[in-house]
Length: 183
Image (cartoon, rainbow, N blue to C red):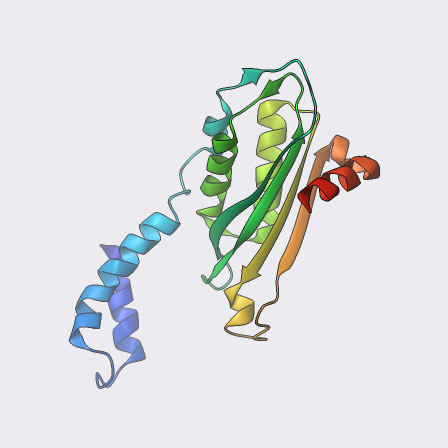
């Protein structure tokens, strides 16, 4: 209810002469925004490690790659969306998790006010520690509306960030192999 009240105040402040914004917007939009915020920030208060508790034993520790995982998040600097794709590669250490479980980790972290760089770091750290895997590599490519619709207005620009943990930190051949798989 507080979010609704605050957004009603913002709307009224934006249209301080009450000549442009309709009564329908003033009365109903704050509720829609409150519901949207509840959904888009639903990762707050959730523990992403919970999604990786159910593990499966494997005999083969070959690289596992899940790519093109679509995500949406909100820039914590401007509260505008950023969105794109996340690729995950990891080398197990006798244990794996379901592909959907990795997606749930991404969703938990991305549904918080976020920075792209921290998002990758948090996902990598969670997978690396919870699976006790040999290594994990995260690649994120995203468009930030705070760069495309305001400020520099660099339409179509994308930011790419990567994070490597464990065996991916110092082994450039392993990183190159993974990047080739992601193409």
